Length: 162
Image (cartoon, rainbow, N blue to C red; front, side, top):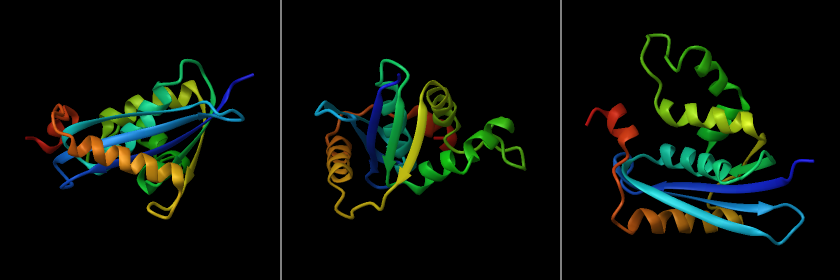
């Protein structure tokens, strides 16, 4: 039987778009007191990219396929997964009707791998509304973003054509 895990996530970008960003994910094994927080960041990025990274890295941190509930305050991330947009984008090779590559396709392609590895349910919550785990992830992501020494987000650099 697959382990049940809840992953709380948040992403932040100072001076969005193009500023330093951070992401954080709190992983909690359901029914236990086992949890850990992971985080990271990139410079020259966007808030949406950091929101995606938080979920992606949270899922990647699991060492076996699990039944996962992802809790996010990002409507972009939640809707992309729950409304099937991501799978439609995949069918069109991440191109819009004009043939232009969709934003963040590099991260979304990686997300598809993780969504197929785990059984994932996504729950959207309102940000900055007193959700303890979301607030912790927000504080952690902001601290990473403001900490300096971050590598450049080459995925964003490519799409922004810097």
